[in-house]
Length: 615
Image (tube, rainbow, N blue to C red; front, side):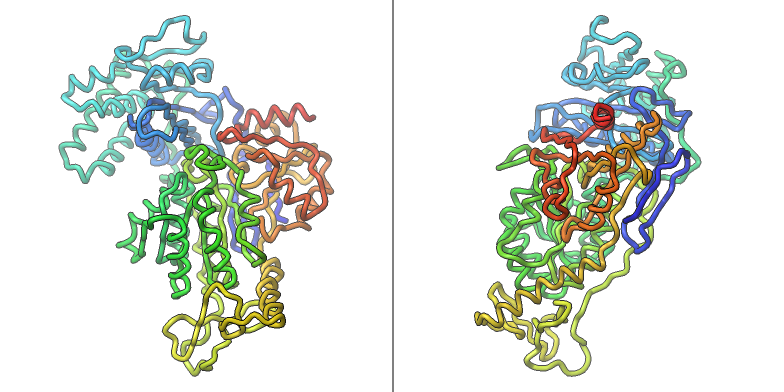
């Protein structure tokens, strides 16, 4: 079990569990909601809102990248309905010199691109915060705004017309005005505009830069940003990367040597297909958008059988279609890497919201018994590193490896310094390509470890018969009780071998705590934020966060729970699915539960309140 202690320090600690698996950054600097002070290494929060189709996504990303270019940390959380146009979209972005883990409720500066944004979010604006809006589109009455909140009417549409721009450039004016009010340099936005619009020609680039500068100048000419208490400053730190969980999974797979990717687009996994397609020619990757999810997983199994590192990605509904093929990979012992990004169900459910409701389904996916590995990263760094290990495990043990994510992790944006050293590629046991291979090559030879070397199609005399039927050692159909017993036991012996190789479980916080939290996946992020606030209040909390969920680290979890004074399970589903797994594997029941299934992630403030109520 790896322990990470939260110390009272402003330094970021980069820690490793010692065997090359995911590093974890811990910064103990507390950041309570509503008291963001940039000079004291706290944060500034900004939100833009408008209707779907009005460019909220691109506006938010541009704003966030302005700050990572200045060496700052960013966390960005996007909410949107499953509509092409209409419905409310919002991007909530936090900026700080210190590391950030999650979103918070409060907003220092709210950019309203329509009335609905004001109605939904103005109560979350902090004391001495501000609201930017176009007075020609939105009328705000004085009694609608909380005391202490300032309003900044900026005529986006009028400025665009005066500068001979296009109506879609209103957002660029708004971005410029926002940066001016936060006293942040405009040059970072100029550079990003050049990069983003260079393919559209110099005229488009210059016009967008002109709009941003017009908004920036208007704010400085009509208001005094120096009196606005919330501001951001670039640091001397180098520019940071900013990427989503899906990007981290995709780039991690590419770093692992993935050369085949097949998927059918299904929110919130869809952007993996876009990332792979963007780099297919550059990196020599075959990318297929298939007709459905069953076809995607069968393509992936076929590519892996042929000796290529391959993966697919989907959400719960698509994963349901993949189950029979998952079982086929299990009995054929073909390596398979599969990313399952959760969203609320059942059925179509809520396609653009988050959930942790598929855990038990993934644990029990496929029919009968066969070995598989289930991994659940908690942040982008773990996503990038763990998918590289997923390919190694899949090819060393010839098993399906399923990485479980959710909309919150996969679509939020995180700033990252670096991902550390690239994981060494291990293709697993492959029969020698030189020298003679027996004509009756025993692809499924019964071994003590359960692992038997494979040949690849095309190896001389290296016959490799593989299908979904039970078979003998050379792959021919055989249904005798003796062979069935031997082959089934052989496959399942891999689990015991795999257990010895998995890394220890991460534990965050002090060894002695008044309360111990159990969480998995992306819920790690708001829990860590809550722990920092509680530490400031003198309340010691620790967290155990298993990232390898099957085979389950029962002894480590049992040891942690038995030492705990009081335990709290936090997860995003109705039935406490991790709690069920812990009870099944350890015979222990967690004392208290904090569960939600409304499609939204946990917020640090509500975790703080829950813990304080229990104490």
